[in-house]
Length: 74
Image (cartoon, rainbow, N blue to C red; front, top):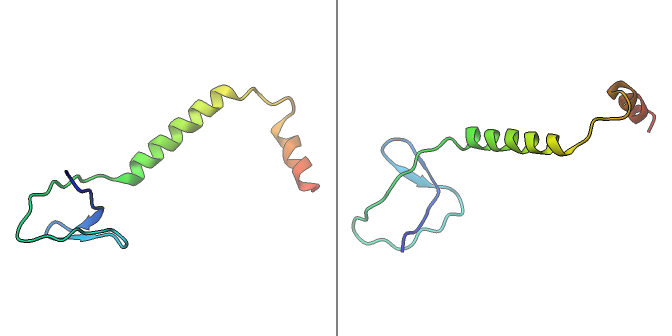
């Protein structure tokens, strides 16, 4: 059964992130390293969620400027 360990990899050494459990390892083990830029993926997911939300929200009945002014009063 594969074990997933999140780590930082500098091209030579993988260092587990703080709090990651490392099972006991004897000798050498085969690993797979998946390189990803999670920031770019998170941004894409956030933009997609915003687009989906926008389709479900009806247009405002009053100008945005009036909403801002109303908010300043409180």
